[in-house]
Image (tube, rainbow, N blue to C red):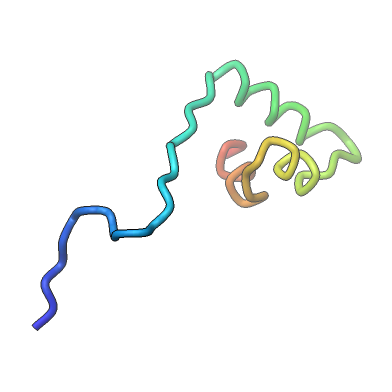
Length: 58
């Protein structure tokens, strides 16, 4: 039987959760909605996946 443990696995990288202000998120979404904007480039610049930027917009 395998027992699940809620602790972090030894050697797993620690990743801090980023928190962005609503104002920052609004600015990024507005930039992504501009004609000709590259969602992939914007997402890459701020360090997220393009799908996460689409989630912000909805």
